[in-house]
Length: 92
Image (cartoon, rainbow, N blue to C red; front, side, top):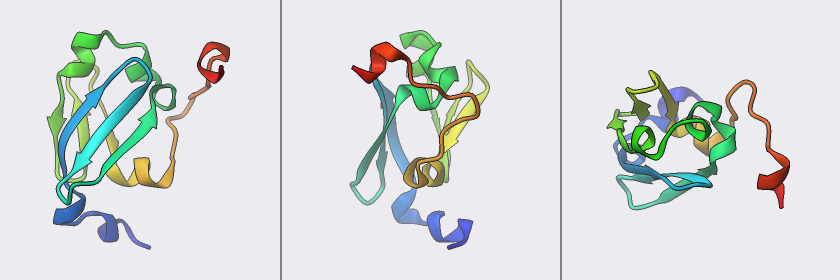
């Protein structure tokens, strides 16, 4: 499967948010995907205010305060950011 298979109008993010445990992305076709926050250390370390400032792009989500982003494809494929380690507290 190529990258272009993921970059469709239906898989375009239309909303994104984080809570203390997960990042959520809603796609144009109505699906909502989520991933554990610990998969993305830059988000896990960010303040709630920084996490709330998102820019939606055609193939992913960008957090300008941290100059970092994640792709819809990466979330769907289960790709964790380099250095992502689940804390013992999060595992409980």
